[in-house]
Length: 485
Image 1 (cartoon, one colour):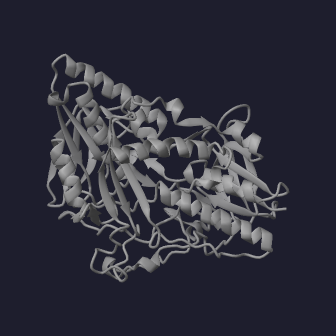
Image 2: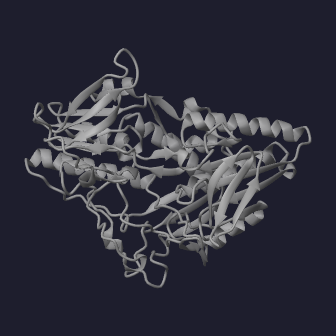
Image 3: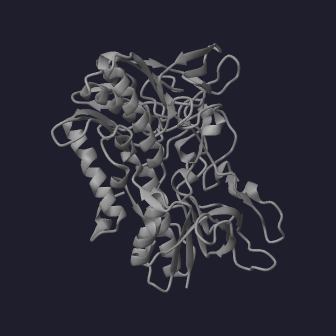
């Protein structure tokens, strides 16, 4: 019998647990350890944040589902990693601390044969002074509770606008090295649409603020797109969208301090400036959770497992950005020191930035971190699960299933509006995620035709369909596995 422990029940953790349980016989144990009691379909937080969905529509409790499907579950959080066991526990384990109920605060050794670290990122709001959701007129859509609160703040502002108050709205990134520009991009389009729906658009100045060097970078160094019969840069497409909606932009900046209604930032010229606002939604930086690891002699081996995020089968050699290759990205998401430990999705440490690293004249690094959310999280989680399944069934470690972000595509649909007949979707599909300049030297590292952009109601329909399809899939309803990641 094998025991597989999954840390985290977000997209990666839940996908891995679902596939492991479906494909392994009941003699093998699948255990999810997560501090969260609910699963949430994070992409739909955007609609919660503009009042077009209730948070209850994008989440469901984990415990009843896992019990029904034969997946064990502990509502606890990992504290430390012990990949060799210790003098009293011969098997590898993680030390977990319960977060609710009678056991709250108690710690327990959770042993495993295989471990999947799907803890995702720490939302590192404290890395930017004053960037705390709900304070200083700043909000977030990173979780459903944040999104609920964001709608409360936005709705209150809309009511003030209806009474004649002119306001400034600031949306984008809240740190010099933040990622997830796509979520902020979708949110600004939805906020702008809501202002129109409430007939107060003329009362608001809406501004995009980002660490991107150009619009449409999205942490992927931008892209060359097929757009209808034309070829267009993503910077041109996003610029066209913003101009059409009268959205202003501030680029190449790192927000480093927030006060009540004021965002302070540094630009690439080394200038320190500020932007006033009445409502702000600024994505924080993402970081690892600060886990520690110890060997069987209680010696610190954190450096074997973590480089901020978890170390996997990537090339982490220090070299200039120009010398990095698509081949440096991981394929199996397996830790090289402890090969029964894996880290799909956001939990793995990327080998390097995808967007060109830039520094201000003061030496401050200002550029997006690589995105690993959404489709890549689900695909890499299934890949890891399949390798563990093969290893268990064959009786020997195998890693036949491989998938690098350098040969993997991703689709992002930013839908503004809501309903069947109203709304518009901005669809951007890129292949591969990490540009391959050797294979596609004339198209900025990506394949035209598979890298394209579209604008229209069809994209909005697709976003709605995906919401319901992935909630269905996450609930493991009949034939859920036929829905791709």
